[in-house]
Length: 212
Image 1 (cartoon, helix red, strand yellow):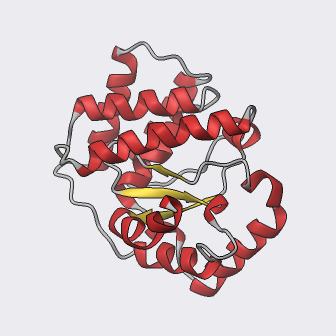
Image 2 (cartoon, rainbow, N blue to C red):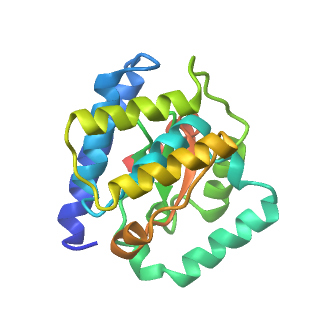
């Protein structure tokens, strides 16, 4: 990320504010909170596309369960990611709440420090987070339609918006609850390296290391 120190500090301030709001008891479907969540993503990641917005809200709804089928592989992938991206990891924020509720938190591998949070700690938190479920009284497709309506009401611009919207709608109409990858634009500009951790696990086991 450009201007890494200033950007990281800015990310941390924004993320702390969102997580604080999430912990204060936001209603399950809160349009003001959704608006704030989208606005935050666009402020932090100007090159984000609609599928990147979709991804953070999807993660807030479903967590990492769809990613974990082999715990040994999960450990291997983290080791590989750390080895392949040691420099970029140092430029990342430590954490970032997902979506508009912060049910889950993106914990970046920049948290891993000698004498602090260890790789096994992060893998364990990631794997255990897969068993948590979020109860929201609407379907994911309905929730996503509300999010896109808010984006359009606010006239927020994103590259390839209409194309991404059509592709996501087709995917949801065909498959239901479906995860996506980050866009190539997002990966190119921000190269994210994180794991998804359920909020209570994050607060208890990971945040204390960050607070130090």
